[in-house]
Image (cartoon, rainbow, N blue to C red; front, side, top):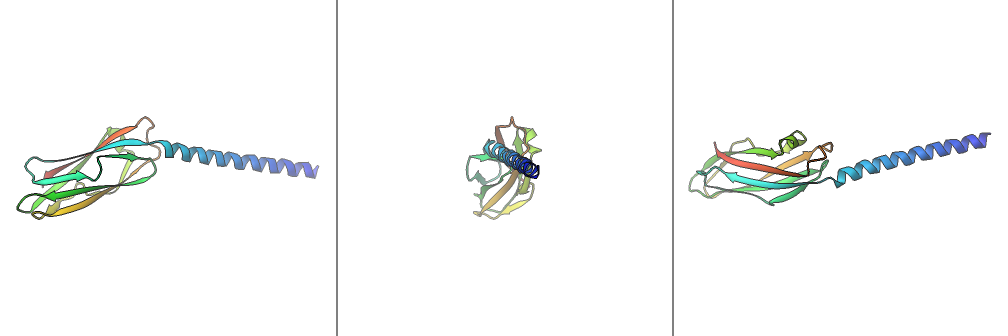
Length: 145
C-alpha cells in the first residue's frame, strides 16, 4: 500500500512538472514567434535645414524584447537651429502596448551649423500586444522650436 502511494505521488509530481514545463515553453514560443514588421519614417519641416534619418528603414519588433532604434540628425545650415521631434505610431492601438524607455522626442534639440548628432529610441512592446498587429509604422517629424 505504501509503495503504491509513493508511486502515485511520483506520478502526480511528474505530470505536474511536465505540465508546468509545457505551459512555460508554449508561452515563450508564442511570444518569440510573434513579430511586427515596422517601417521607420522620418521627415523634417520644410524650412528646417536638417537631414534626419533612421539608421535602418525597416525593423522587426518582437513583443517582450527591448529594441533600440538609432537615428541621426545633421544641421546642414550655416547657423544654429533648435527643433523638436514628434513621435507617432500606426496603427494607433499599438501605442498603448509600447513603452518608450528612452526617447529624444518632445525635447528641444539645438544643433550648431554643420553639427551632427545621434539619438536613440528605446522601446519595449508589451508581450500582451494584440495578436492581429503584424505591421506598423513609427514616424518622427522634426519641427522648428
